[in-house]
Length: 58
Image (cartoon, rainbow, N blue to C red):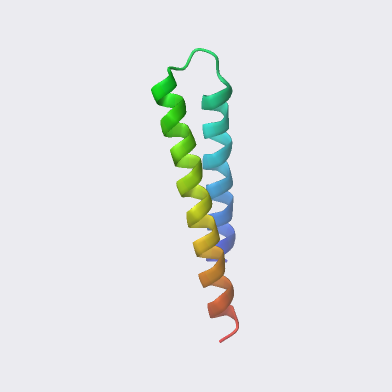
């Protein structure tokens, strides 16, 4: 259950950051931080999914 919630939150964060990147009124610094946030969210999703699936088999 926890990995599912983490996945939904991670995908929501990625979606919001894509909107920031695509929005024409944003500064380049905001776009840079949005890209970094997407990268961190992806790493966290992969980490959470690998730990969540490992504990499910115990």
